[in-house]
Length: 256
Image (cartoon, rainbow, N blue to C red; front, side, top):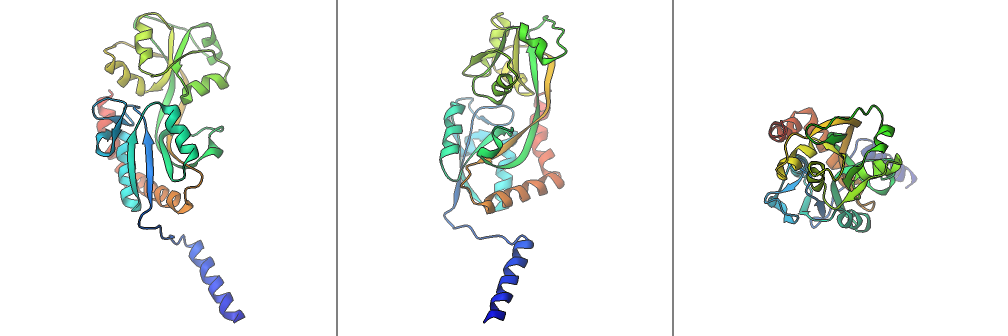
């Protein structure tokens, strides 16, 4: 009996070491939440509510392929505001949110899959406006606008940079043109899409505050590890075989 037990125990250890996949119930389904964040995720009609096939974007396409390869079912919703869907993901098992910046503060709050894509955190100015900003500290003398509760807003707070918050990031494009703010703290290429949406041209980057900011898919902590492992394995394979670049290309071309 003891010998049989040891053999079984050894087999379990071997399967674990080899990364054997646990079976998920047939009914298992992830609830995916996101917001309008072009070109990464957005409603096809530009509104603040959409479901499933009516959500598009670079990261959305990557996630669809990732779930397909991992053989995991999901429901996808785009909603507003970000604060609400972020809170839902923190509270509800098997909920996930994207495109989310992975930071030191957020890291222990979720289980993570990624990175999906990356951006630069920038300060943007109106046409014809020049600013000689060499450090983030120097930006304090100017009136800065940023999206309420976004990672950029958190970034500014963490660096003790005062800013005027807004409920939607694209509002800041108009604020720049109307001289209501001096600088817009946002992401590149995101601001280019929002500016076009607002009919604003000529905005330009005057300072890169942070390079290589990456977006992730963040899961509620009660999500099974098997889900995280399958999805991360699928994403890594997509990066290796060129699928991610293929899915990104149409959106990057549109942002030039």
